[in-house]
Image 1: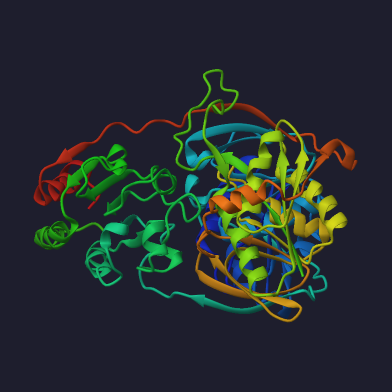
Image 2: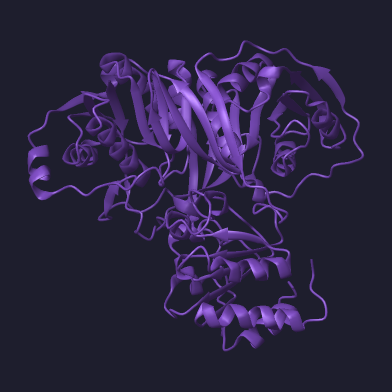
Length: 317
Length: 249
């Protein structure tokens, strides 16, 4: 049987995590079909047809799918689900919101947030904020699976030529209405896919002080992250939060500044390749996961850090 | 208006998890348990809505073993009016919890159901959405702001790109984010009073639904450990290490 992946996109472009989910999905079974639900989303369907891992693109297009509403997506997915053994999508806020609605109506116990495909029915997933890994086997006939995108490489985007077929839409929900989206636009790399992430915590003391972090992020072409404490305190917006209930990041370099390192924060960044911690409390738990720890006052260290970076002839972007 | 709030008893968020040597799960004996943190936000929001005069009654419900009623008592101590414990043992998957809650919703007929967006033990993030699906109700997940209007809720949701606002018709399901509010502490007199509030016990087996697990847990293991790092003595040394040793900048 084949795998059906639900694409996340903005009607013009594929969201990057869809490509990571494609990699995982084709490890489950290489007969991978992708469902695109959107409004005037032809460019998305076309891009997906060029992904070599994708064997077929099903495109459902209607004005009612301009904004992503789980109540409108679900009946379309159910309508197309019949011939598939697995329904999959990424485990970000898109997939977390959507997949359980589909699973419940298929009477399937969903497997959330997998980090490894062991076989068609067996997966590895983190539990307890990543402090334990569970190997789980789904016994349901039809399986609903969400994929932790940062645990899989993105699929290549060119060279394929899958057929694109039109799927059928269904009636919109009368009970849920989209009002608005406040999207924070930035020229920086996206937090989830950036090569370098620099994050600030409660130690930053104010939103204003985040400019010390911004200056270094500019220099390193890094994304800016934050601990929950910094977001709760209003220093920075929620889309920057890294952790168990925020975003999971796996950059080549993660720099934690003024972050003590609660279990919940570590859950979102401890798989990073190289971790730097800058904290004036030498006993802070963040040092237990740091490859390089600097015990220092961040208000001295950050300007010096920028100065040292400026002295380097070249910086990898 | 009547609000049903679902709460779950989990290992306390401050406890360092230990994996059992036989790989069958994590150690729960003699470990501090408490209410799943975002479920506290769900209770708090319901209480605030009641205090504003827009709700008349709050019913707190949990599914689990006898001891799980502690979480219901805690909800009663901060303002819920009645409690329900649905007794069930072993692993109860989110789909099964959703089916149990569906039965409770059919019995209690609430206008709103609130719960945390995710339990911090299994990290599934499924139950609210599943309940919404099987009831055919609208869902507002990851809520960081709720406005109760006439026949509808306007809910601000925390999503990856920032904030999204949607309007859902009542009855509806809301799953709560940690930033929705600041949960209050129960005062001692209220804890005492909560002991006298009604707490009904129902056996899950009486509900006529199949709650057997569909997912086999083959093993639970510790994640790979990171190798110990080093402390550097200066910013200069840090930058040199990043450039020449780790080669990441």
